Amino acid sequence: MKIWRTTFICLMFAWLLAGLISGQRIFFILFLLQLLLLASAVVVNIWGALSFAYTQKLSEEQIIRGRQTYLHLELHNEKPIPYPMMQIHLATADPTNPKRLNINLGSKDRLLFDLTLECPHRGEFLIGMTTIDFVDLFGLIRLPFDMRLLPYYREKRLLVLPRLIELESPSLQGSGSRMPDQRFFATDQTQDPFSSVRAYRPGDPRKLIHWKLSSRHRSLLTRQFDHLSEPCVLLLLDLSLPKGGSKKDVLSAIDSCCEATCAIILSMLKRGWPVQLVTHDQSRERLNIENLSGFERIHNWLAKVPFSGHYSFSKLLADELATASHVRGVLAVTHDASYDLIPVLLNARHSPTPVQTFFTGPAAEDPVLISQIRQNTIPAHFFRNCDDLAEQWRVVP
Image (cartoon, rainbow, N blue to C red):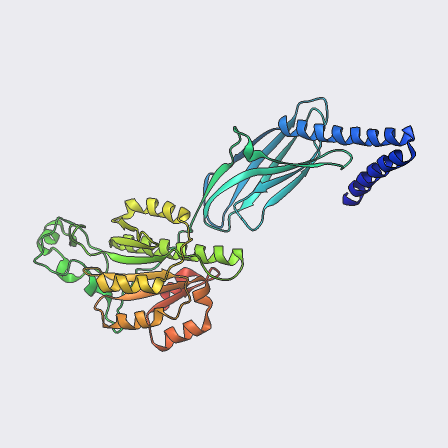
């Protein structure tokens, strides 16, 4: 096609040059005929762009990562004249794999497409047609037209949520201790006031059982304390941009961070432990999740939150450990393969608060970092995008 287009243009200038040199009218006629054909091709392409009719819709507007959704695209031509050839560019839920459709739409014709869209990464995506390349019948003019410039055109929004991974009952153990995590219950002090009772859950300390009410109701009941005074689990999330690798590797590292965070929060809330999520950015946003009713909000937030910062996660962790008080434990989720984290985690051994780290993405694939973490017996888990998070959680750090 490019060779034909180049030949056509060169031939135009050849006729014009021959006409100017010889003065023969036939050369000017040939030049004007080609020029007229070129102008007609431009007009047809512009007409096609302005009169283009379509409908597009998504089968779902919200989906879990790893599943499929469908884009229904219908193209109409109700005119008696065929449209020029079109190459339609489509934005999908996979930024590394856009789709293209080559269309030849005749007069009084329509085409239907049900396109399968893979959702390999979490995030909020604009789905649908972006630009259309109109090419005339002779292949002389390619007119790219951006549909997003039209005031009435709207791409479809698709929210891809992190996967929900069920974890076993969480275990918060200190760096220098293998004591069970029951000692980190916020309600160990029996003289503290409580607001209500609830059914006994496996793992509740015996001293929290309300024996009088239990005998009266003939079932074990545990004292339920006010959430305002109950210590939470402090969860630190690294929102910096993952370093190195291809665009797909960066997106996979972000997916791993979000799904590990999502799974940990869900597991803690099911245990009845409130969570305070601290994000690693300039504002250091703190999100409090008191119970399972607030999980949907944080699940949607994890699907949309941008990973774009450039900060030191080791400094955030050190600052939070220095000021953390009255918390049940500290969990950190990071993809940063920085060795500056090791001395911070070693200093955490002297803290009575248990600290565990979840390494994802590049950090989970760095053999030197993994070796140093294990040699120093630092409580940590390593989770890559291809790993089974539930299985990694079972590994004793």
